Structure formats: structure tokens, C-alpha cells
Image (cartoon, rainbow, N blue to C red; front, side):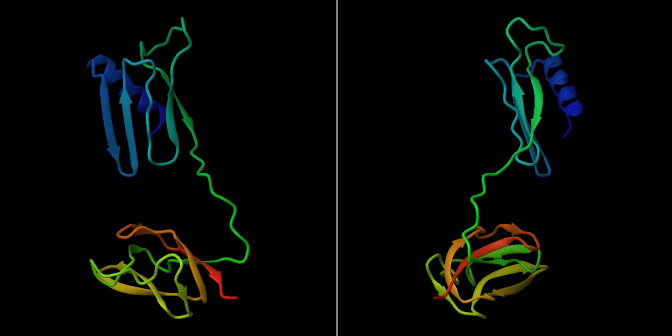
Amino acid sequence: MNQKELKELIEFLIEKDIAEFELERGDVKVRIKRGGEHAVVHSHAEPRFYAVPPAPGAATDLGAVPVVVAVPSVPAVPPPEEGLHTVKSPIVGTFYEAPSPGAPPFVKVGDMVEVGQVLCIVEAMKLLNEIESDFAGEIIKKLAVNGQPIEYGQELFVIRPKK
């Protein structure tokens, strides 16, 4: 959703005297609330939009609705620890940590794994693909959530090498 579309949406909401509005389109979610000290427009995809209240005494074309400014979202990613290995998904699909619902996960943080040991399952087109460790060591992070859709090359686990 671009700024022109947002402006048209805000003008429509003013015209119809709608105080609160929420729209979800694909992976973009927009929430607009009018009438408070300031309104915030949230987006769960790039970029994030934040509504900035007008300066006191400033006239706007939109009446009481603030101006919308696009601010790119930059997630805070800590620097990777040296010597760690990341297991990435070789396919697009759905991540499963266990062989069946209610069963214990294949691995959990703190477990030692060997090369070839099954770490998880990625379901793609109704096929269950076992993802095996290509590195021996200790699981220090699990980066995917059970049932989460994952992309090709998405990081799934972080392994500290065996000493």
C-alpha cells in the first residue's frame, strides 16, 4: 500500500466519519484510528508506516488526521557468534519440529546432534521431508516455530561445533 492509497483511504474515512479502521491485504496490515492525540498506522510488512501528528496550529488537507510517513523497519539482529553453523531449509514448506502432533520434538536447544541426525520435517506439497543435520555439535538456537511457513534458505537451527 503506497502513500497515495493511504491518503485516499484516510480521506474516505473522514468523509464517512469512521473513527477506527483496520485492513489486511496479503502480508500488509493497516490500522488507522482517528480522533486521539495522534494516530498510528501499523504495518506488519515492509515498510512500516507511522502517522505523525501535525504541529500545533498547522493546517492540513486531511483535517484532524495526521500525515503518514514511511519508515523502513530494521530488525535488531545481534552479530553472529564466530564458529557457529546455521542449518538452512533446502525447500519451501511448513516447518514441523516433531514427527507427529503431540510427539516430542526431534531436537531441542541444548541437544547434541550428529551429522545425518533428523532435526525437523519440512512439509512441501503433502510430502514430509526430513531435514538432517549437516554438522555435529550442540543446538544453541531454534529459529523456526512449529507449523510456520518457511522459505528456501531460511535459517532453522544454529549449531555450536563439537569440541
